[in-house]
Amino acid sequence: MTSTLLDPPVEATAPAPFAEASHLEARAVSAWYAGHKVLARVSLTMPGNSVTALIGPSGCGKSTFLRILNRMHETTPGAQMAGEVLLDGEDIYAAGRRVNDTRRRIGMVFQKPNPFPAMSIGDNVVAGLKLTGARLKRSERDAVIQRCLSRAGLWNEVKDRLDRAGSSLSGGQQQRLCIARSLAVDPDVLLMDEPCSALDPTSTLRIEETIHELAATMTIVIVTHNMQQAARVSDSCAFFLATEGNPGVIVEYGTTDQVFHAPVDPRTNDYVNGRFG
Amino acid sequence: MDGSASALDEPRNIDQGLSRSDRVFVTSARSVGVFVFVLVAAIGLFLGYQALPTLHHYGFRFFTETQWVPERNIVGLAAVLLGTVEVALIALAVGFPLALFTALFVSEYAPARVRTACVSLIDLMAAVPSIIYGLWGFFLLQPRAMLVARFLAQHFSFIPFFRVDTDPNAAAWAQSKFTASAFIAGLAVSMMVIPLAAAIMRGVFAQAPLGEREAAKALGATRWGVIKTVVLPFGRRGIIGGTMLALGRALGETIAVALIISPAFEIKWHVLSVGTATVSALIAGRFGEATHAQLSALLAAGFVLFAMTLGVNTVAAVFVNRSRSGEGSEI
Image 1: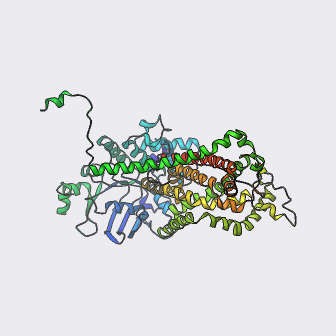
Image 2: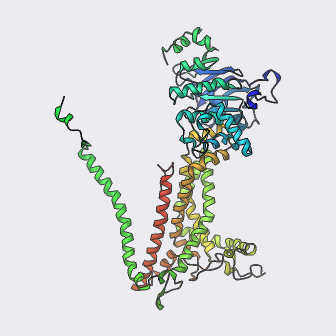
Image 3: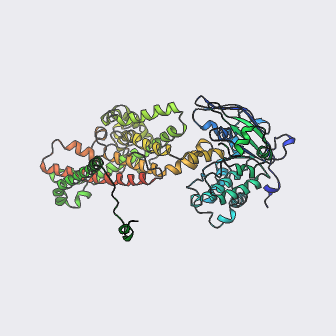
């Protein structure tokens, strides 16, 4: 075991109550694309050391919400947002906060596996470290690669071919490589945007196991279309819905158990039981 | 059950079911495509045929002789070819970084409105007639570039290319020694190849996959980080291809070079000092008063230039097309 697993990363500046993994809180977040409102005053607390699932039908704004959480939303031309996102109590949109630092602390795994094709498997893992200016000794580099690939559940499959191109892996392996790449910069939060939607059931299972293990040391927010997956991996669950012509809102939020087995809102009940969506 | 169909276990000829109008369209499209090949081949064959008497008469001496004095039956391309390559390489040395950074700025840094304006400006730059660049080079650029040439000669004369056979430090320095050189012609040509190279590079950069860009950003990359990890590796072949096409254009550039240089038929490595010659400028300069035999010699020079640019452009096209990004980028 490596030291990172034994000592969860502690943010030096964070106040004492959050001594474990960082928690993330969205307050009255709204979003627009080219003036069209897609999210209306969504508030959600995503506690540390847990997995929060965002579920809901297509077009309800859950991916947009996720992208607001690490400031990827603003990279889309014409995209705007309102509200606050607090990472350990500090607004990530505050003036003077460097967007690169925020994105490094709040990592992201995308729907489609996107390893850097020109790089080897090993270089892919440490790409984020190089991008943020870290200089690594050979031994440190090897240690980081082994640690992150192990945490992402990929080490045993690729340890003999770290020099091969990242694109030579299967889709499921590529996605776990992307998870390893995100872990290498040691983020406090990991956002996952339908990370298994392009994968087969076996790969999906492997990634879900990985998510379980990661939640011990960090905060995870996952968008998924797959009800069973949300039920399997998450601790708490937020159900997003956008009715015809209206921006998306959170209809119901609670522990996963509660949302799936005793939903308060009849629409949640219909959705989790597959009656629409 | 159709017994005859199941009995035949061999590949069928599948009727494509092309209608009459489809066939007309396919045929005409194909003939236009073939016509382009025929046209290029015809130019090559014509030049080759015209060049034959000269090549036959002078043999390999045509490529080793430096002088071009058809009146005394001395004709050779050595100095001219060297001058052509020198001017083209200088144009690239100046134009390549400018084109690369222009393309990076337009595709990665410029806000949407500035980008649109820049793209139009670059296209406009490509549309300016080369005689304008020639005049600009002669009247505006030369008096200033002369000072740069003198500076280079003063401080970098330990590099053989930058030597000039006069004292650049003299109080009354010989200005005319620094004019009409390959250096100044190369500068003018670089302005002409920048739009071509920048447009191709920009086209390839713009196609760098969004997924990879987002991956880099989500890791905390700055814009330069995205360029380094995603855009440049993705656009590598586009950069090479665009540069080669620019080289092809620089090799053939005529009128601007002809305006600026003063002809000198000698093997000359000192690119800052007065006088050089290029194939195209030679043809343009001598074509008017040429006799029949002299014309054949000029056409032979043209044939060599044609073969060179065709070769360079073919290699460039291979690079651009083989890039992961190749589809859609125009040449």
